[in-house]
Amino acid sequence: MTLRIRARQRFAVRAACIVIAFAVLRTPAAQSAVLGGMVGFADITERILRFPCWLLDHRHCFSLDRFDPTCPQCM
Image 1 (cartoon, rainbow, N blue to C red):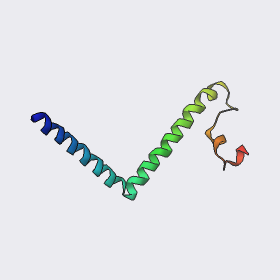
Image 2 (tube, helix red, strand yellow):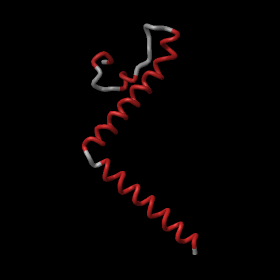
Image 3 (cartoon, one colour):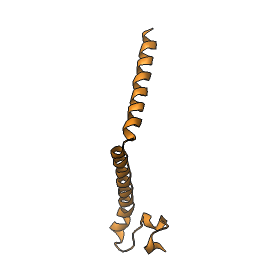
Image 4 (spheres, one colour):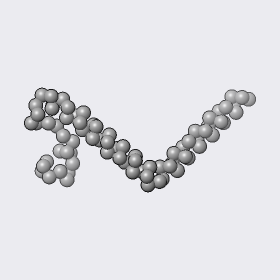
């Protein structure tokens, strides 16, 4: 019997956390914070990709910009 009660409690807590997370993410401030974090993650990923070639040759470094169709240097 206590296993059922604990399972229901865990389910209720998890459901409440999901509902609260969705409610918070609906606010513009939270959305801009999440997007800022995603931009920061992309920047860190690009720096990690550039680091090995920067160690070997400073002139010819790999950049994620070449995959961007709007990049003027890559056309």
